[in-house]
Image (tube, rainbow, N blue to C red):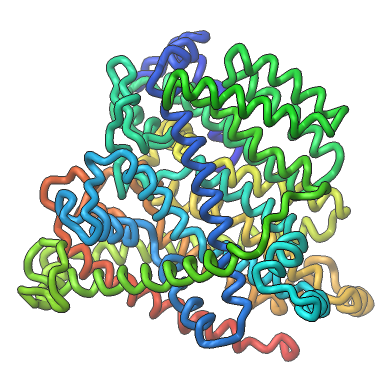
Length: 625
């Protein structure tokens, strides 16, 4: 429901005016408003470019760091430890800390950068922070993929005199190319929907010269999700909001289908990808987009035409960009074509560069990961022990050293109440998740391979397309049901976000259970339900525990959903308590000391839950279940 219902609701509501209880047919009026909105057109261009750059940095950084993690030495252990911080701590803590490092107090900071006035710095700062938080998971997955490569290949290359960089580009990268492609496209989809990092770091700013759109001034980081959130806070016609949501859903679905095509790597999936590229060109590319769409469609039949068509598209858009400037001259359809290009050409020969640049880049990536994590930890401790709400670090220890921030945040700010609210959400989500996902995994296991694969992809697609653009239709649904302000919408959303990971993990585990177990149960007279309850369920205890832990952490760290659905401060989880303390970059009087103290307590609380749970899962002996 959480995946499909908002899409259906947005489609229907986009043709109606909806002011509270007043509803009337609007036809295509909302879409006409949308097409004439230059601000939305600008935010679309910014969003696609931002997502593309974020994907490049995340995938490239993840691959470079994975090369270091492959080495079994002290450096790899230190690097692994430093990656735990951006991976395990929520954005609502990490992003404001980066705001302290980069922006400080009105630009007085370690880097002396003012994120309120410097558009170039603001844009690339959000790209860096977002990719910094995404790189660890990417690196861990790449490391696992690299370890599957036979060592005989690398040993033979070394015997021929190949260096580490050459081996990385000529052996490692081609061997895991499909993994890189699939994860890269998934990162692009997620980047299109990014909200929290941008809101907490720059709040959509700073403004730039080309961002004036009639009555609206667009900031250099006003992506589609940020723009839609601002509309949600100021527009009372849910029909108009639904029309904007439909455009975003359309773009995210296109990117998600590209991701599925990269995973399947069939002739049919490549044809679908090129057809979607042609559709996007027609919708977003203007007059040139129609001609480009015809050329891309010809590439379905004549695959060798694809690269020349893309290069012509690139040249034409470069000329247009130089003439009209950014963002008017930037065509987001070009980025979609660039993302689709490796999907279609995955089976062909790639462009291989020399390995000389890999070693210094790998060193830079590793040093950046370690040093940045140390800076964030140090800053968190420093600010939590400072009596003044001044974030400029001018000495080793705070000038006005105090531990009173911890007392204030507990006694005066009643932070324990927020922790209790968060625990209710997290525990509820963790307990309900396996009740839904384990039977679903068992059902998929009993279907044919093709049916099971389609079911898994369908579940993943419905979750991947979620974001601010689906939360607004969900808000309308839950408002009609009278559930706004309650925890029910939040728990349902958190469960929906955990379902793909939980089902995929459980199906993979259940497929590894020997068929002899099922045969023995059948001989003993066990029904399918009895086999599920008495054999598979006990065996699956560790993987169920992993899915519950993922659900717990996802609900504990949730920020966007509570921001939309909760209206009573007394019901706020810890994430909104953090947000109330420091606000966005334009907030008048952020309470940095209290924020840092509450963040430190949160980190300790999460570790206190995770470490014992992880140990209990790893100690489970499946052979004696």
